[in-house]
Amino acid sequence: MAYRMLALVSGGLDSILAARVIQEQRVEVLPVHFLHPWGCGSQDAVRLITRQLGVEPRIVEAGEDFIAAVRNPRFGRGRNFNPCVDCRVFMFRSLFPLMAETGSEAIITGEVLGQRPMSQLRKKMILVDREAGLEGRVLRPLSAQRLPPTVPEIANIVDRQALFGFTGRSRAPQRELARRLGVSEYHTPAGGCNLTNPSFMPKLRDFLAHYPDAALTDARALNVGRHLRISPDLKLIVARNESEGRELEALNNLSAPVEMPRSVYIPDGFDGPTVLVCGPVGAEEEELIGGIILRYSRRQNPPEPGGFPLRVVSSGHTCRVFARNASPPDVVRRFLIADLTSSTRPCRDEVE
Image (tube, rainbow, N blue to C red; front, top):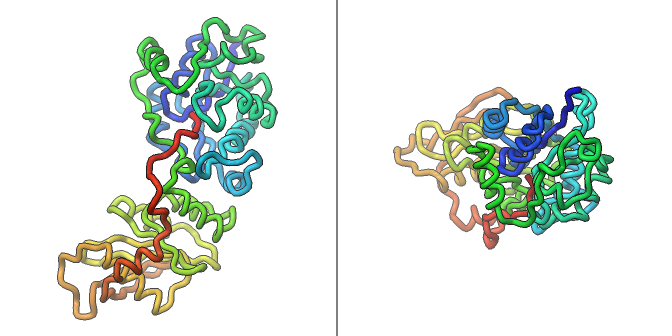
């Protein structure tokens, strides 16, 4: 009889190793890659996982229910806005339909006991499994010998003696195991979930204060650009480079609710940032938008008689307006949604 298990795989070293360890025991491993609006998961990771495991992962994408869980976590948050325990429970519960569809016996994760302060302590692992309704069905191969036996181990579906007892934050045992298993490509642990990043917190708080859980497009937009709150009804997102400018144009093309219209302002013939405008715009706001674009632009070309031209795209319609005067730096700083005193280095509460 062929046994199947789902493996949550982020693209990081631990989760890839956990899946490979169980593959070595001739269990069919079906990788799953979890996506949520704030930076967990990517198409690059999907390609990496496919190369390392030989199987293309299934994608599970979180939406409105995940935003609601972040807004009101039952089990609290880490150092920043990361509700890691609630997130883990959410992820496990999201796999129930796929477990039933594939006939999978258990879920494999790359968690290492004691590696993360928020969710990878023994009592937190037990809590997550119980809350998710998966007691005995979550296999953590890298720390299994230091945890109670799971159903697959008790049933001899996997050999417990061939699993490991890693603990703590050191990655040296994992790197040695990667060498033995031929795992040569994985994402570094410095990346991960934006919910653990101090510099992301002001943007997230602003989103939760002004948007409903259903605003998925606006939730994803938090990952792009500089954010400026002009008024309760109006926010600007200023691209930091050409790639972000294209992302903002793509977001503008997605449908927007009537009460929260979107438009995009694009420099026409001079070097300046694209700006996504979330909310209604009048003459005064349009002058401010132009001024902010000029503040962040290089403006190497001389303006036309009316000023620097901007192409405005809104609801499929295009018009042309002009920016005349750059906004003073203190005006821009006043609107910027940012904690200028915080470090941009993410803390290590996120999970594999």
